[in-house]
Image (cartoon, rainbow, N blue to C red; front, side):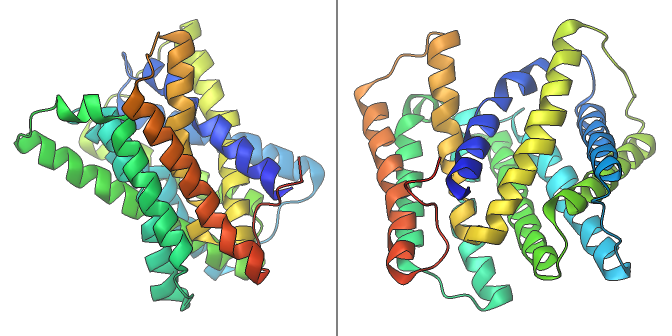
Length: 301
């Protein structure tokens, strides 16, 4: 089951970049993100109410969902979308992949969990592998003031993502299942984004084209309802530091999709980077099998 969730998360989030590109044409970024999570929240609430699986939350539960909505479904995306205006997507991918390390550090800080050496080493290997994968893009980018602003936003977005992971761990320890927490978190995230649009004067435009509506549906349902539920379930089962290694594998899937649709050419450094990412993935989960901690079972499908 864990392996299925892991692969599902990587495959879905590794392909959402195609849909995101189609969202950046006409409609303002905060409005598009608000539409995405509002639609995802409606779908989740409808599913949970129809199946009678929506949990009742107390004040603490609602507060945690509000924080999760702020971190995972609001600030996280605003930071990364804004950073993409100033720095290459490859550099954003490299910064985001540090979530594995941030999650390990935050789990130690907030939950007193031991930082496993294999997780840190695997995360470092993955980071080095991504740097090689995107080296042509990174080497060809001239550092400017905007570059540092973009890096700062990408790092802030990664920290927000990591904070959302910690909140999800707390929610699941309190018995709040990811489907319920995501429904409320996405609702609060969409509400905050809508409030931001109103206060900043950002227009609520919409584009009734096949490309925009189709990409919105893909981002809302597979990308958000399925992707975030699968990922946050892994956070509860594997721990936030191991689950976050998905962030290293997303760009690998994205590059393979790009090779098929956009003619991306694999180079020797890129192939070496791919090997490092795969070795990092094996290292992240290797020691967990020896100690009996939750991990991705190799035999499951």
